[in-house]
Length: 348
Image (cartoon, one colour):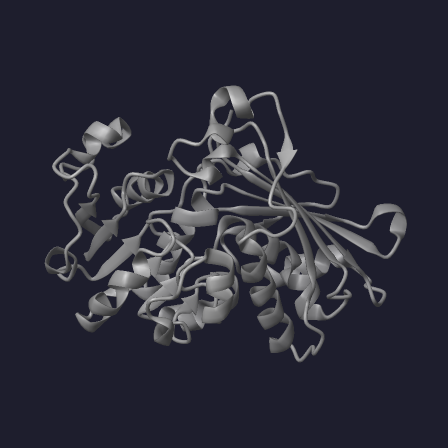
């Protein structure tokens, strides 16, 4: 059994992670931390976990967490980087679901997150946890930076096109929509029911924190295939009045004729258990992946022109966060990737 601790188990990502971990056949959940809820039974805050764990929230400490084989950080940005060095020194593996180790450039981190990085010496070591790209590196890692939700949907949608070198990397557009849970559990006026319901709006148009992460990932994908032009992405996120889900509509311009785009995607993802390339003409829905660690993709070439449109949907809390983190854990410990994740999406 893998002894697991969760730092920051009170947010939406944290409870989703706990939901998956308590059902995982190879996991022993040992520690769940929260300074604010210290002493409270986990199942009192989240009654869906009643009967699945008797743990109480405890204050995070190196003493308790160092008894684990793996620690997940489901904390706000800037927390994990304060504690990870000591955990690694104690022989504990770490998966960070926040953004502390996603960007490789500490100056870029400061630009987008407004603080100095506390352990920039670990940025080069941290493995970006997108299994469909970095599976071998994840398997050997002791520190994994779990991707963000938008970056997961966007990168998986554009990956086959960039790897094949058939689109102009400067033509990329990501028009994305997310449910309100992506804003987190803390009280925010914009996330209140009366504010978000029956409305639809863009945000972060002039610059969103996930943009450098996506461009960094797309650049790595492109350069790994010998392409020299760095991708440029126009990224516009939107808030939709639903709880879960991300829908990314992606655009790219073809630079050469491709005989069968559908076959290109099907070939790329034929061995990926958590990416579903749907039949031609499909329209993937966010509800078809709700609660599941799955990305569904469909693609179009409208009017036969040189513009490719890719539709990519995920559950932002599962494949976009906690589910992908568990998938990474499975890889790090040599387990079947579907262990604890072999579930059907919730409908309706």
